[in-house]
Image (tube, rainbow, N blue to C red):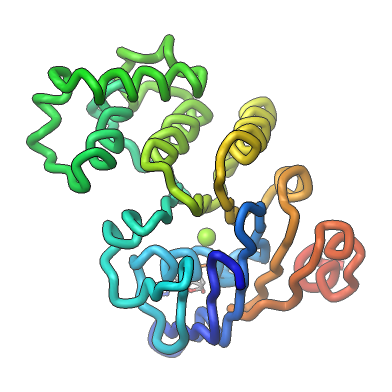
Amino acid sequence: MGILEVKNVNKRFGGLQALGDVNLSVAENTVHAIIGPNGAGKSTLLNCLVGKLIPDTGSVMFDGQSVLGRKPFEINQMGISRVFQTPEIFSDLTVMENMMIPCLAKRDGSFEMNAIAALGKQGDIKDKAEHMLEDMGLADKHNMQASSMSRGDKRRLEIAMCLAQDPRLLLLDEPTAGMARADTNNTIDLLKRIKEERDITISIIEHDMHVVFSLAERITVLAQGTPLVEDTPDNIKGHPKVREAYLGE
Ligand code: ADP
Ligand code: MG
């Protein structure tokens, strides 16, 4: 049994079958990539895992418990954190303020926007946030307004904000999209390090095959809402169906 078990998940948007009988098992402490062409249903699947969408049918189990019917914040508290396709940080706040928010949410189990004003007075929260920024190589950006960071640094901050909640499953939706090669390579190194240092399972949706083959231990190929094949990176590389459906050969 994997830490994440998706069984027969279907999701329609009107006449469009975005997901059709999706089965997926993600083994604990592995990096599992989900690849597939644009519109294959990858983000829809992720949305079904974190409570942003509710599947029409099927089940989603995390560590033996159903996530269906739970709100996103409840699923987050179960131990699933997600990095979105476009960075979701608070642009008007500083890097440090952004970092303190998940630290506070982790300590108190909830977070109120009006608590931002009092963030600076929370000594333990400040220490944890400072430590996280340092660990992520963002210490020198401490007082910078989040909106003025580079794309790569925004992504790094966002990953740090997810990690501050000590998730057991980290979901990433195209984390290197729009990044320059150097930032992409930094992200690969960062994710490798996170995997080495923590008890964590990572599931990553990714377009960049260099990223996929650098990180993934298992790969699921999704095509038109249905898993086409699931295998090791080596087997996926040579799979004729994958070459045809995904690499366009
Ligand atoms: P991917 O992430 O693999 O590119 P998506 O999961 O975003 O694909 O989309 C799968 C299909 O579902 C696409 O055809 C997309 O247009 C459609 N879709 C996604 N979200 C919605 C929505 N909220 N309403 C209607 N159609 C949607
Ligand atoms: Mg997508």
